Each structure stands twice: as structure tokens, then as C-alpha cells.
Length: 196
Image (cartoon, rainbow, N blue to C red; front, side):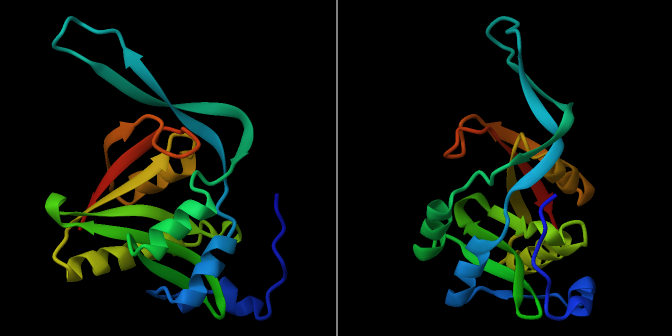
């Protein structure tokens, strides 16, 4: 288990009701890139292509596979890719802050022609996970989208991130598809739709 450095005001950080979510400023980008975006999991989702039943049927199935031990995976998007999304105004970024510390972010893009908001990245700094920060970031993203007339959100995650699957199911998102070799590390992306 990774240790995180001691914080100045430990009480502030225990209470996530003090969480502030706001549009990112230039200084926030470096803080977002410094977060531990890796994840550990003891479950992955395996894709199985089912045998073709003639020309009219194609079957794809995903199922959870328990691992014999927890495995740590690096985040599928390198810093350069995240910087490119943000520097070219491809994404709008909201950051979550506890006190002076950035503890998470969500970045998204309104796809007007598809009538949805595409959430490229939803990240909570590893030491702050499982405290409701991810859910609050989703709620902030939903508010951002509603203000622009959107009610559909598409989230993406690699098949290796079992925790993300559990999170998306818990918030009521539904599986909508996948793309092989989607990330720069060639991982499969699975897509979830969330409606507000």
C-alpha cells in the first residue's frame, strides 16, 4: 500500500463535506497531473467474442474475472495526452479541492452533434478514494451538462479497472459498448451511459 505524505490539517481532509469543486485554472493542471491516477484491482473484465452464427449474428460478452491477488495498473492516459486535451480546449476540466490540495478532477466535452457529454477522465487521488469524491465529481459534471442542455453522459474505462465498473454500476450507469485498442497502451475501453 502506498503511503501519502502527512497533511497540514488532517481534520479538514477527513471531512469531504468541505470539498470544493470548481472549473480548473491554469495552476490546477500541474496539480491534476501530479495526482496518483494509478489503480489497484483484484477483478478485471474479460471480453469474449462468441462464435459467429452465420452472417446475421455477432456476439460479444464481458464477464468479471477475479484475480488471485491485487494488481496495480498505471493510468491509461499519459501526461502528454491529458495536457493535449486541456491545452487545445478539447475538454472542460472541473477540479475537486480539499483545503489547498487538489484531490480529483473530471474533464469532459460537449458533443452537440451526438447530444451528449463525453467524460474523458474521472480521477480521484488514490489516498482519497472511497469517500464519495468521485460521486460528487459526477454530480458536478451532471450540473455542468444540464446547464448546457445535456442529459446524457458517456464515461469510459479500461477493462482492467474493476473498481471503475463497480462505481459506474453503483451510480446507475449502463454499459453501451466498447472499443478495442482505444487507449495509447492498447487497452480496451468500455463505455457507460449515465442519464440525468
